[in-house]
Image (cartoon, rainbow, N blue to C red):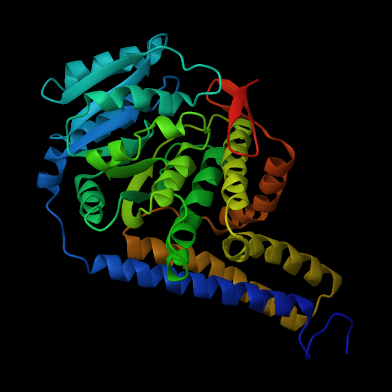
Length: 392
């Protein structure tokens, strides 16, 4: 038998089978969760809007900012918006003024804030200052590059009947984007269901999607508001930890939140992936061993198997190995498309870009492990092992 063959199969074939089995099991678990949530009663979207205060920390600079905020205003006409801007952010101030002029009937409260002190998360700083002015029964935290439909909002509010916090499922819209933007969108869209929904078959959620989440206002205040998040750069992870530490439950819904971020080049793409991967290492570090193993197998192992398949096939080019690898590549192209159809998402399918996005994941993780300084918007932060940080 040739060196590296196992039971008559080449090593590439064995690795391909392992990858395929892992992908198939994750896909089936995600599909079951999608089917379970699809069977839930349809909540009243109009009623939900009247209950909600939409808290949006806004930072100028993105050319799509006015369009994205306008889409959300149109989608949620009866919600109460709290727009949180910086006192020196002239672009955000002009965008807010323009939207107030074009949406005179919208309920918009603008909060102008000073700069956050060193070591304080700018997003959490603005949210903490605004919470005192919120009177609505439900708080929705929504990033300024994200849009949410009325139906998705209603599903988040309905999920709060059985949970302390409900979070949405992210999807990137990359219309008009160049290659770096499409690559980022491919990474998110390929992995959203597999990352957020599949693990629900084995364990409760350990974090939330910080782009969009909802809590009942009274419960949020009982948890201490946003004050416990002030000194954590990964504010979504800190919020999830705060809920779980108080015995609360996180509801990961299939309600879609659409994100439109302008990626202005390869450097911007690398900064974004570096920040996400660094936050992933923070999440992993604070989990018990069982959860670390589960996260590593579900999310860390598949890209390594892909690399190993390619290396094994080049070292031992057997027909069985090549056929198995081709079959797995077809499967990995089909699975995200199938899950997106089940979710009602119409994301473009780019198999080669999808493959590249997965192959790059270990490199991004290695970068995040070695380099603990991130650039976020206009600032650079040194991130500590406990999730704290300081401005560089």
